[in-house]
Length: 151
Image 1 (cartoon, rainbow, N blue to C red):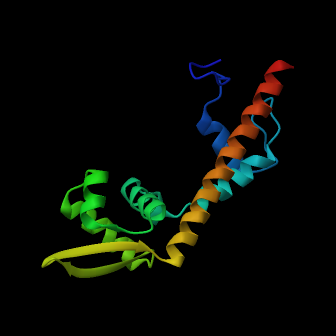
Image 2: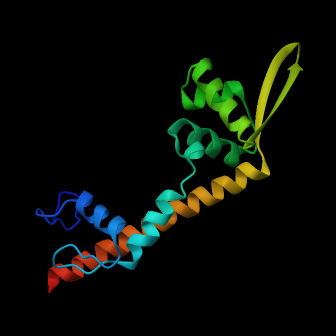
């Protein structure tokens, strides 16, 4: 067992298992038969939305979906980002159609707020589904490896 409680095969690295899964479902790493979950995990990895997957944009989308709407100041302070960094990420999310921007004046001060669009909500749902698929495939692989080590 490794330090995290997961079974470890010192002679085979994760990279070797991944290469095996990518190369062929019929080619087995010595002593192991290929897992059906490998294909599902690789498909899920490929379906991760790069726009949302980036850490800052994931934080922005998570906040917007949790709150429904947030202004620039709230996003900046909560995510501890500079104005420029936050602006760049918000511009990309807007460009992709994941957020809408509303600019207004409140008590003579400019206020910029952001809301997730329907497309943004759906993209986030697909992203979460892909992560769940990856987790399920990893759990199935771990179970399979544990069962083979017990033999």
